[in-house]
Image 1 (tube, rainbow, N blue to C red):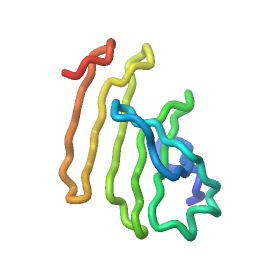
Image 2 (cartoon, rainbow, N blue to C red; image 1 turned 45 degrees about the vertical axis):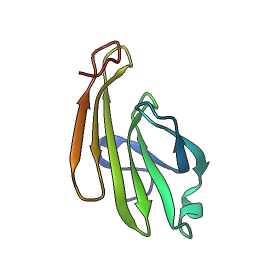
Image 3 (cartoon, one colour; image 1 turned 90 degrees about the vertical axis):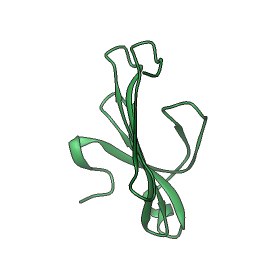
Length: 102
């Protein structure tokens, strides 16, 4: 599988870190695929056809340490966030069309 093609025809790109405290997080400092080969920690972001962040994996030493998956309302606001921590614990949050957590 290529580094730019993953499940559901999403595009993956690589980043140094994220910014913000509100969901969805914003990935920043994009890396080229060749730049992640020698990095211990980086983020692999998944983007949908509208270039919205549909999720990311935080990788540390080759292992996925954190996963976020996002879905959106028709108006572009966040609908659902599913967060999986390093222990496999899943937290799911839902938001109404005005981005108020439910």
